[in-house]
Length: 454
Image 1 (cartoon, helix red, strand yellow):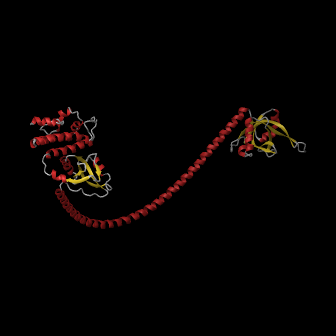
Image 2 (cartoon, rainbow, N blue to C red):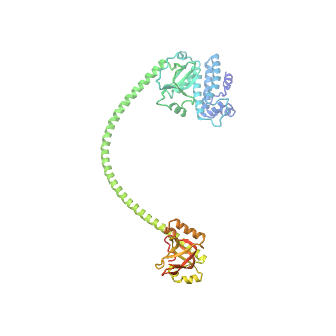
Image 3 (cartoon, rainbow, N blue to C red):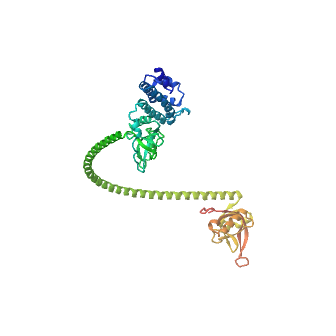
């Protein structure tokens, strides 16, 4: 008998042994090649379930007639091929490097249900009566059955349902139009619990292929029996009534205690409110005073910053003017011009003309009756005529920009370099006289505010 049992069970990939320690499978696991076997070997609980399944087979061998035992072996062969595929670890697929926890969990549920199935096999206690069943309860428009498994064999479905009922007391089995038996853990309102199934799957409480069904193809409830269902419902109702009574008494006591606490809290809240009002008023006064001080400080700081910025701009402007003036002075020196005052020109122009001295004179370029001149600081002779025929291109450009700017002082304040020549003023009149004129060679625009030559 032992030899036949070993032959039968090993054909499904597991050795028979009396020990219940998972490490006893180490030798067999080291030689395992099937995907389902490798999954079992990866987890101690799955190893223990596998050995428990072997013991259940040994018990069935002693209990069942030979024809029923043969049928059990055939059913076992189909189950081995089916459950690993249902759990996502088909023997036709390669072994994954990392076995997902969902696969291990599915193997555990299938294994536990299978042990129960083997031990109940052949009992035939109520299965024939259960197949007839009772009508499937009606669901509301938004309610659905949560289906966790489907089996062709009722005993297989019952074993699986009994395993689920530990966590879900509302578990039942319903027969469908195609003859299969669907295991449901109960119904839910999907409008109120849209993520219920996904949450149970994430917690590994139900298989990943679980789904919801409106029950249109379900024909009857075949497990538990109507009497057992009514007894369970009566027990549940009594338990709920007792719980409701306890909850009502608890609620009454809690309400009385809450009323007392509410009165105390109301008095405390009034005192706290008065204290808070005083504190708020005090804080408001302090805040307003602080804001006024801060505003005054900001205004003072902003004023100082504006003043400092203006000073900085003035320094930069003065620096730019000085640098420009130095550039002009350096350029005049390089060209051989000597800067003189209008007074020096008035007194020394004849000598300067004879010697051909190159001079530079500061003033404002202007034009009177189509005569170009340089307005200078000399009351006796405020305008010195200038000739532009010998002026350089840059000098003529500077004077052209002045004229185009309508003789704006900012565009016409300049220093002109050239040589002195004699001109006749009031020719043919009694007050005819010789005056100095200037043959222009160079002209430089002076920065506004620079007292060049003074």
